[in-house]
Image (cartoon, rainbow over all chains, first blue to last red; front, top):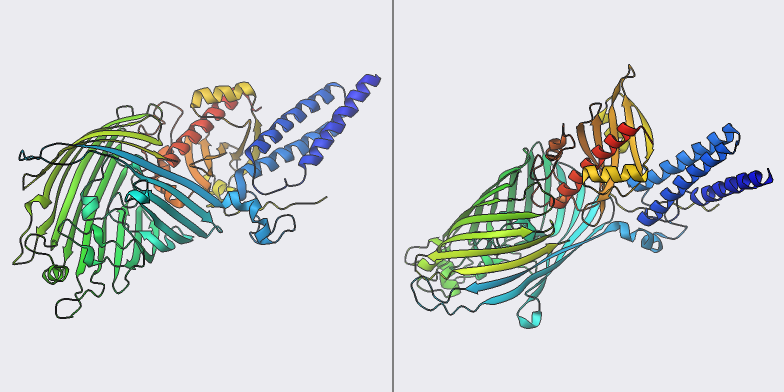
Length: 459
Length: 170
């Protein structure tokens, strides 16, 4: 009898002790996974203990009360797991009597988001050009980019997000370290959010979505390199949101800098947020229909001057009006992935620009640049876990000198057709290995075919 | 006793649980239930869903209409997306099929969150092989990890629901 009483009292004491330990609305800030699991184990043990007590004949009303409290504790733990949807706490409140800054350490792991991606590319170039002449191209193995994302949530409404990129592995070997984007978001409602800072220009497919697992191809399509110069980022301000089945983005950014334009395209006109000339601004708008799962179709436009106070021989500034338009579509069904893009840029004042930049003959900047591609891929492992094995084919046509001003000529080498045949393998969703062959032709017959191998990761 | 404040910073609460329940079961009476899964139930749910069932504790709401008829259940599932968690409400109708999926909190940047229409793909889904990415569920370019996490969560909930329905509430 004494034994039973001791056991009973011991059990009750244990239950009460544990409950007291658990009872405050859980100290600290973030629900810690391990701690939660521990609490769950405790609750399970307590329930077993209650059953034991019931077997020992403890008064039913006391047991019911203990069970009720256990239930409450269990719900409390659930609230922690669910987070703020269940537990609304003013953001001005501090932890443990500390001031907001001192309390930060309790909250930091909740506010910071870290991610990253990277890719390495091995390119084998054909020794000869299409016309049989020696290509002289040197095979290259490059750690193209290693990137980290840092985001911080100041509150439900104010969010900072950034991407820090290291390209080509080392600045001592021609690589670079860049802030690829860094912006503040003010989240107002689905249909209207505001953004300012160094933003990604919302054109084409890859400029905003360029993580290696998101696109097929070891090498980015040329259209999204020379006409839409990925990764294209400029300082600006704008709004974005979704309504109905549509997504939109509209930004005003500092314009491109025409002094970097060349016969090969607009790529070197990017200012990348670095002491950008802000004499000319540009407006960008993008509208996508995303109302049907699997389908994204839309258009984007960029309009503005790129002169940035560049002057001609007479000291007159050259505006270099620049407009770029793209149409893009993607359709996914089961293992099938279809993607298409068409982009066209039109530039004003090109003859004056050419002269100001000292170009001659066929070095003219294109008055019209046009390019596009169609791509099809099929994941033969679709629906069988995380692995994917996707053969793909991409046909691309691009001409960065589609039209040049009267009195100037275009270089037929800039009129290119690329056929890419490849295979992408993803053992898990966050890793990708690609192998592809690119048959690159141009109207001058100087195309150099290449074989590419790449690996990429995101986390 | 010193009472400390829970100071979680900036989870993106998109909708409260109460609001989500009202959307799922307008005007219904809902009652919260806490499920304590046994190890065996967890193992079975993991096997049937192919998704990890990391907790023995599951929260659901059971909804009844005015005439006390059973309308369905709403499960809450919290899981990691990329580096940060989200909480989904997976609503299961009286026949055991998914009625809707609602994002309750989302801590990752909103770029990783699919549009509302995308979640409509889960409506009517049952726990079978077609409830998978690149089968009945089309992935979202740029939000693959969220799509994966959502599909796993829905499979997990359906499996837990089936196990509990079969063996009675633990």
